[in-house]
Image 1 (tube, protein in one colour):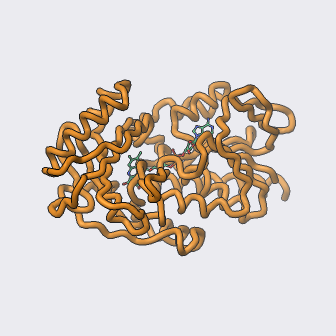
Image 2: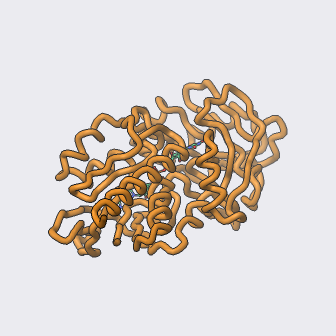
Image 3: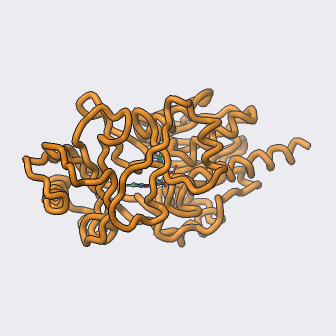
Length: 322
Ligand SMILES: Cc1cc2nc3c(=O)[nH]c(=O)nc-3n(C[C@H](O)[C@H](O)[C@H](O)COP(=O)(O)OP(=O)(O)OC[C@H]3O[C@@H](n4cnc5c(N)ncnc54)[C@H](O)[C@@H]3O)c2cc1C
C-alpha cells in the first residue's frame, strides 16, 4: 500500500509512522528544509532556538505512551520549568525535544521516505490515485492514498476541488503569532523559565537557554498576544522586532543591552475554532486531512488527529482486501 503525506509536522509524521508500522510504503513531503512544522527549531551560534512551540503540552497517558515507544530516548526529555502568571492548560510544559524540539519529529521519520523543500502546489484525482504537483508544475508521482497534514487554510487551498472535504474545513479558524528571539545580554535572575502575561502585546516569554541541550545562554523567546499579532500581521519583521524588543526590556527589566536575534511570523499558529472531530477521511476518494485544528491547539491534538486518520485509512484498506 502506497501513501503520500503532505506535511512533516507532528500530525503528518504520527500518521506516517503508524502506517509504516502497518507495512505501508510512505512518502512525506514538506515545503520546509526539515521536519517539525510548528515544532521547528533554528540553529543559532552553534546552538538551538525553538521558535515554534517551546515545549509539548501533554495531558493524556496515551500520547505520553506513543512518545515513549516511538521517539528515540535521546531525543526527548521531561521539562518542568518555573512559571509565573496564570498558565492555561494549553501552555503547560511536559516534554521537550533534545537538543532541539524538531529532533523529536525527526526521530519519527525512521523508515519513511522524506522529501523536504517540496511544496505541494496542487493535487489531482486520477484513475490510479492522487497526482501531486510541485510549484514548478512538475508531477512528483501518483499515490492511491493521500493524507493532507497542513494547517486548515493551507489544506483548504489543496482541497478546493473536493467540496466534501473542503466544506467542513471552512468553519475552522486559526490565529497568527509573532515570535521574537532575544539575547538578554546578561543573566536575568528574576525572570522565571516561563512567564505568562495578561498584557496587550506579550503573551509568553520562555527562557530557551534554560532547556537542556540548547547550547546557548540568555536567549529568550517572546510570544506576542493574539490581538497584537493580528494587528501587526503584515508589518515588517524589522518593525515588529523593534517593538517586541522594547516590550521585552520593559517586562523583564533587562538592563544590559538586549539584542534582537530574529523574528518569525506564524501566520497559522494556533487553532481558534476547531473542526470538532478527530480528522476527515473519505473512503471513496482515499483522501484525508488531519492536524491540530481538528481538535484544538496543542501538539497532543495534532498527534491524536494524525493517529486517528492513520487508523481510519488502515481500517478502510483492510476492509477492501477482506
Ligand atoms: C508560537 C507557538 C507556540 C506554541 N506553544 C505550544 C505549547 O506551549 N504547547 C503545545 O502543545 N503546542 C503549542 N503550539 C502548537 C503546536 O506547535 C501545534 O499544535 C502542532 O505543532 C501542530 O502540528 P501539525 O502537524 O498539526 O501542524 P504543523 O506543525 O503546522 O505541520 C504542518 C506542516 O505542513 C507543511 N506544509 C504546509 N503546506 C504545505 C504544502 N503545500 N506542501 C508541503 N508542505 C506543506 C508545513 O511546512 C509544516 O511543516 C505552539 C505553536 C506556536 C506557533
